[in-house]
Length: 115
Image (cartoon, rainbow, N blue to C red):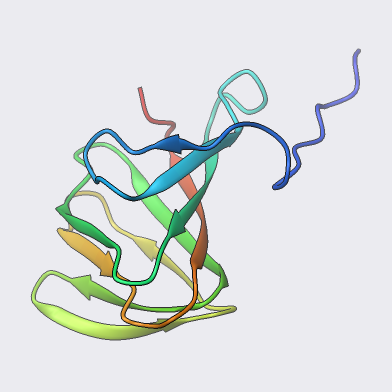
Protein backbone atom coordinates (compact mmCIF):
# COMPACT_ATOMS: atom_id res chain seq x y z
CA UNK A 1 0.00 0.00 0.00
CA UNK A 2 1.45 3.42 -0.92
CA UNK A 3 1.98 6.03 1.78
CA UNK A 4 -0.51 8.92 1.93
CA UNK A 5 0.41 12.17 0.19
CA UNK A 6 1.64 14.95 2.48
CA UNK A 7 -0.04 18.32 1.74
CA UNK A 8 1.81 21.61 2.26
CA UNK A 9 0.14 25.01 2.86
CA UNK A 10 3.05 26.69 1.06
CA UNK A 11 3.00 24.50 -2.06
CA UNK A 12 0.77 24.84 -5.12
CA UNK A 13 -0.75 27.73 -7.00
CA UNK A 14 -3.35 30.15 -5.64
CA UNK A 15 -6.55 30.49 -7.68
CA UNK A 16 -9.06 33.32 -7.52
CA UNK A 17 -12.40 32.03 -6.32
CA UNK A 18 -14.97 31.86 -9.14
CA UNK A 19 -17.87 33.17 -7.00
CA UNK A 20 -16.00 35.56 -4.69
CA UNK A 21 -13.69 38.04 -6.48
CA UNK A 22 -10.51 38.92 -4.58
CA UNK A 23 -10.65 35.71 -2.52
CA UNK A 24 -7.93 33.15 -3.26
CA UNK A 25 -7.81 29.44 -2.51
CA UNK A 26 -5.93 26.27 -3.24
CA UNK A 27 -6.75 22.62 -2.83
CA UNK A 28 -4.75 20.78 -0.15
CA UNK A 29 -6.45 17.38 0.00
CA UNK A 30 -8.77 16.01 -2.68
CA UNK A 31 -11.01 12.97 -2.93
CA UNK A 32 -7.94 11.10 -4.19
CA UNK A 33 -6.42 11.68 -0.73
CA UNK A 34 -9.64 11.18 1.25
CA UNK A 35 -12.86 9.97 -0.43
CA UNK A 36 -14.92 11.36 2.48
CA UNK A 37 -13.70 14.98 2.50
CA UNK A 38 -11.69 17.68 0.79
CA UNK A 39 -9.58 20.39 2.38
CA UNK A 40 -8.71 23.82 1.00
CA UNK A 41 -6.75 26.82 2.23
CA UNK A 42 -8.41 30.21 1.65
CA UNK A 43 -6.98 33.73 1.81
CA UNK A 44 -9.23 36.70 2.55
CA UNK A 45 -7.38 40.03 2.20
CA UNK A 46 -8.16 43.11 4.27
CA UNK A 47 -11.62 44.27 3.17
CA UNK A 48 -12.31 40.92 1.46
CA UNK A 49 -15.74 39.31 1.59
CA UNK A 50 -16.97 35.78 1.06
CA UNK A 51 -20.61 36.52 0.27
CA UNK A 52 -23.69 34.83 1.66
CA UNK A 53 -24.04 31.25 0.50
CA UNK A 54 -24.92 27.78 1.74
CA UNK A 55 -23.99 24.20 0.96
CA UNK A 56 -26.91 21.92 0.17
CA UNK A 57 -24.99 18.68 0.74
CA UNK A 58 -21.85 19.46 2.79
CA UNK A 59 -20.92 20.38 6.30
CA UNK A 60 -18.23 23.08 6.01
CA UNK A 61 -15.75 23.10 8.86
CA UNK A 62 -13.62 26.26 8.97
CA UNK A 63 -10.49 26.81 11.04
CA UNK A 64 -8.91 30.28 11.24
CA UNK A 65 -5.19 29.67 10.74
CA UNK A 66 -4.32 33.37 11.01
CA UNK A 67 -6.08 36.71 11.29
CA UNK A 68 -9.45 37.85 12.59
CA UNK A 69 -12.73 37.99 10.67
CA UNK A 70 -16.46 38.43 11.15
CA UNK A 71 -18.51 35.32 10.42
CA UNK A 72 -22.20 35.70 9.61
CA UNK A 73 -24.36 32.69 10.45
CA UNK A 74 -27.89 33.21 9.09
CA UNK A 75 -28.51 36.78 10.39
CA UNK A 76 -25.99 36.79 13.28
CA UNK A 77 -22.48 38.29 13.09
CA UNK A 78 -19.86 36.76 15.36
CA UNK A 79 -16.13 37.48 15.78
CA UNK A 80 -14.12 34.64 14.23
CA UNK A 81 -10.50 34.73 15.33
CA UNK A 82 -7.14 33.06 14.92
CA UNK A 83 -7.24 29.54 16.39
CA UNK A 84 -11.04 29.16 16.32
CA UNK A 85 -12.91 26.46 14.41
CA UNK A 86 -16.57 25.96 13.52
CA UNK A 87 -18.66 23.32 11.73
CA UNK A 88 -21.40 24.95 9.63
CA UNK A 89 -24.38 22.62 9.19
CA UNK A 90 -25.76 21.66 5.80
CA UNK A 91 -28.06 24.38 4.44
CA UNK A 92 -27.11 27.17 6.90
CA UNK A 93 -26.51 30.43 5.07
CA UNK A 94 -23.17 31.99 6.01
CA UNK A 95 -20.67 34.66 4.96
CA UNK A 96 -17.30 35.97 6.11
CA UNK A 97 -15.60 39.35 5.95
CA UNK A 98 -12.15 40.59 6.89
CA UNK A 99 -12.49 43.98 8.58
CA UNK A 100 -8.89 43.89 9.87
CA UNK A 101 -5.63 45.12 8.39
CA UNK A 102 -4.01 41.71 7.91
CA UNK A 103 -4.71 38.70 5.69
CA UNK A 104 -7.09 36.08 7.07
CA UNK A 105 -6.10 32.51 6.24
CA UNK A 106 -8.60 29.68 6.65
CA UNK A 107 -8.59 25.92 6.30
CA UNK A 108 -11.94 24.66 4.98
CA UNK A 109 -13.00 21.03 5.26
CA UNK A 110 -16.00 19.82 3.25
CA UNK A 111 -17.76 16.59 4.26
CA UNK A 112 -18.80 14.96 2.05
CA UNK A 113 -16.42 16.46 -0.51
CA UNK A 114 -17.54 19.15 -2.93
CA UNK A 115 -18.44 17.72 -6.30
